[in-house]
Every structure is written in C-alpha cells, then in structure tokens.
Image 1 (spheres, one colour):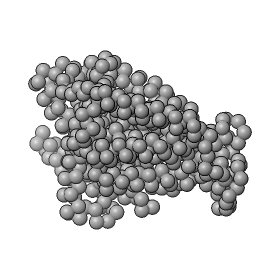
Image 2 (tube, each protein chain N blue to C red):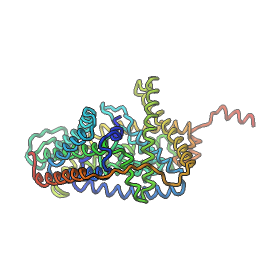
Image 3 (cartoon, rainbow over the protein chains, first blue to last red):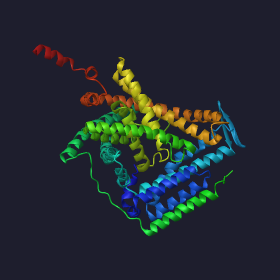
Image 4 (tube, rainbow over the protein chains, first blue to last red):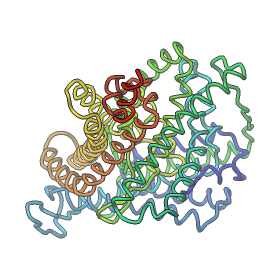
Length: 261
Length: 250
C-alpha cells in the first residue's frame, strides 16, 4: 500500500503554512472543475507536478508510478465517455454497432472526454501535492475551531490513529493465513477472508473497550489535546502563491474557448 | 471504485455535495447526542471507522482479473444505522482520497452519498424488515451486505451518466435523455458484469464473518443491537450432549 503520509512527514514543504497550502489546492481543484477548456487543468497539473517533485523532493519514480496507475482508471472512464454518448451531437469520426449499443466517436464527445481527463489529471496532481507535503493530523486540526465539529474531529483523529494499528494486524493475519495455504483455492480463500474479517472485527471491538478505558484513566472529558505546530506565512510564500493564482486566472481567462477538435 | 476527482462537471458535484452535507450534518448531530449520552460510543465508532477503512483496502479476488475492494459499509449499517454510517463513510472517503489517491475532493459529496448513505440505507431498511420475518440471520446479513455494495455501484453509474449527459447536452433539454440512457446502459453494463460477482463475494464474506463473530463473541452483536438475545440463542445452538448431561445432573 502506498501511504502518502510517510512522505508528507519528511517533506521540506511541510514547514509551510498548512492553511495556505489547503487554500491553494482548493482553489486549483475548483478552477480546474469550472474551466470549460482542458488547458487550465493541464496547466495546474504540470505546475503541481513540478512543485511536488522539485520543491517537495518526492522520489520521482514513486510519484510517476502512482500517477500513471491512478490515471489509468481516468483513461478508461474517459474512453467510455468518448464512445458511449450515442453520437447525437457533432461530426462523426468513427462508429460501430455492438449488439444494441451504438459506439460512436464524435468531435463533441472526444472534446468532452479530453476535458474530463484533463480535469482528473489537474485535480489528482493537486491532491498529490497536498497529501505529499502536509501530514494528515495538521490538516484536520482546522476543524477544532468549530464547536459543533469537536466530537467529529476527535473521531477523525482516532480513526486515523487506528487505521495503522489495524492495517498491521491485517497484514500479519493475512501472512499467517497465506503461509498455511489459506489462499490456495477459491473456496479456502473465501473462508480465510471471512475469518480474517471476523477476527479483525472482534479485535477492533476489544481495542475499542481498551481505548475507552485508557482515555478515561487519563481523565478524558470530551476533549483531546494534540500538538499543533504553527507555521508562519513568509513574504516569499505570499508572493509565490499570488503569482501562481494570478497566472491560473490568466490561463483560465485567455483559453476559455480553446478546443482540440 | 469511486468517482475520480474532476469526473463530475457542472452543477452536479455541487448538488451532490449539498445533499451529502445535509445528511452528514444530521449524522454529526446524532453522533454528538449519542456521545453525550454514553462516551464509550466514541471509542467504539473510532474503531469501527478504522475497520471500514481497513476492510476497503482489502483486495478481493475478481473474476475479470482486475482487483476490487469491498465497500465494508453493509456491516456498519447493520450495527450503527445509516446516519452514523454516513459520517463514518465520509471520514473513510476523505482518508482514501488523501492517503491512497482513491476518489477526490469535489466528488467527495457524490461518493459519500452513494457509498456512505444510499447503499447503507437500503441495506439497513432491508435488514430491519427481514429481521421481523423468520428468515435465517446469515441470509439476511448476506442480503444486506450484497445490497449495500451493489446499490452503491448502481447509484455511482447513474451519477456518472447523468452528469456526463448534462454536460454533453448543455442542460436538461435537447439530447439529455438520449445521452443519459446511452451512458447509463454503458456504465451499468460494465459495472453489472464486474461488480455483481464482487458484491456476491462481499455478501458471502460478510455473512460467514458474521457467523464467526456470533459464535465466538455473540455478546458484541447483542450489545450493538444487531441481533436479539433469542436470535443469538437460536444461531448458536448449545451442544446437545451438554444439554442432556445438564438434565441428568439436575
């Protein structure tokens, strides 16, 4: 499993202001989705890859492998969107009748699928930037400001902590089952998976009891204290962020009517 | 598979986000109330959320050769009800988007609605209704888990189809309906062939897992209100020999 949080904890960009990073990423994602041309999301994606790889010092091989694996799914969806529109609008480039479905590629559907693909690309690169430079707990500390969300944010932090505990448990049980030929054929694989799920569930529930006991014995009163590092926004950060935002808006404005076909 | 970042254009991601937000806020309200009543509940929900995440990172053997994962929300819906499951599903989806690059931020609303709310709601209703009939508990759990998984993917394909058709036709008029039907057939066709066997496998795994849980720690299930005491007794039949001995000794 690729865990992006490990990279974030070691990233040189971690020491930049968390809120600034989150705002920029939110801006990028929304600009990408609102853009009617594929150029803006592509521009955002390329800039984000550059920042993550060169300033964030993320291992290039790891990053590209993850990007290609995820974009593979986006590519399949984009192909489906291009081929199954029914071909009512635009000039027909290619058409084929399969049983009762018309597979038609038109200029309109092709343009639309390119747009969707580029949006997925831009959004994914922005998310990668955020999750590879900002540790999860720092991101969620923002929720503690709202009283309504106090219980919710504690739930988030606890879930986050327990994910890794149970993941290790899962890996260990699975290894033990595999060593005893638990996944030899389909039938035993089904049985092993069920046993895995049930023992995981029982262990988790027991852990829940222990957690409650541990929290109570440490005087838990409905509020947990976490260390919250505060990073200042420097002058250069502000300038860099402003330049980026302005250039995205400029690209958005000038390429609004651009289409590939 | 969740809807990826950027796949939902136009007003659709906003619509789904608003819809999900309403449900999530209702869920958080219920959560706050329950935690106030009994603080033990928070610890329980925390481990349950982590359980769903770990379950959804489990790779299932798939017929088509590709790998897919269980949604894991069926079991949570049976145990905690649909509203709390929506909150848990939302948290799990945020972690999936940020930690594993599964799903996205603008599509979070749509994904929460399908995986966190719609599937679990159907599963929960079915489970409650079927619980009152004399149907076998394991069959009931199988149906609930199967429905939670499959309904999620049916709604996901309809969400995708409606959003793409809307963007393609430029509104609800004109060729919207034709494009929508075409996309729905395509997405549903692909999901049905790849997801139906997976939903069955997930249902089987959850049902058998439920059996193991009931046999070894049935008290947990009774405590959470998933099954009643009588049901537990009827599932876990006491050993006949022991029963006979008891009679002799008494």
